[in-house]
Image 1: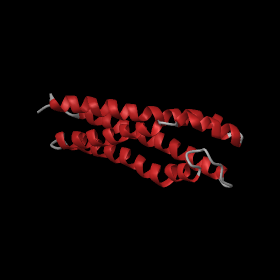
Image 2 (image 1 turned 45 degrees about the horizontal axis):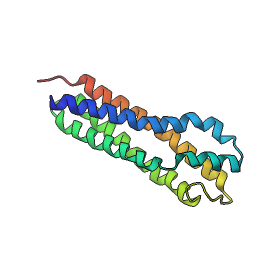
Image 3 (image 1 turned 135 degrees about the vertical axis):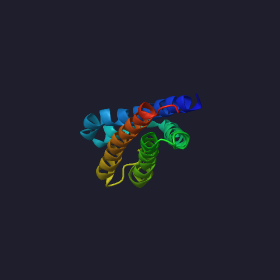
Image 4 (image 1 turned 180 degrees about the vertical axis):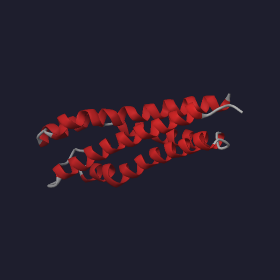
Length: 150
């Protein structure tokens, strides 16, 4: 029963981690054409979203726990490991590309000369993370679907 609970939590937390990432991706085409003043205004809607980063941490932790619990079965184990790695990769992308853009713009309240390249960096890093989280969710689901009670 513990495995099923952890599988459920892994799927739910991975899916919840996909929601903010997907929201960024859905908004990307419209936001890329905005002039600077409008773009900076729109960016204000993300204040407080840093808290959603806890979803990533929780999804990583529960997928690691899932991998541990299903370690006797090769395919479910590796799917859970790959899910955790995908979710961890989102943090790498965030800290290499998203966070530096946030810092350079003081969370999109100050427009440096290179604000347009920072916008691209910020938007495309979120787009990449959407794909990565989706792949992680797929691995989590495959782990849960392929696990068999022994």
